[in-house]
Amino acid sequence: MIAIREIYQTSSERLTIPVPKAFQNRPIEIIMLPLEVRIQNKDCWPPDFFEKTAGCLSDDPIERAPQGEYEIRETLK
Image (cartoon, rainbow, N blue to C red; front, side, top):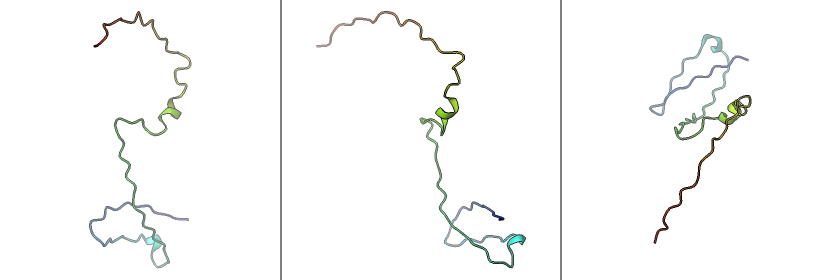
């Protein structure tokens, strides 16, 4: 099966699509779907981040240094 996927930006109610030679003079099917535009929030993890990075430091584990003593502060009134 030969398939062509093209993404067009619409600016009006009409769209002209060129027909490739391999598709000319034969029945074709046209399916229109709105393109879901995903805006990556810079404050979010990328898709599959945890799946791709899980276990990457298993041969060099991170060690937490001693945190010291907790500072005792005066109570607020």
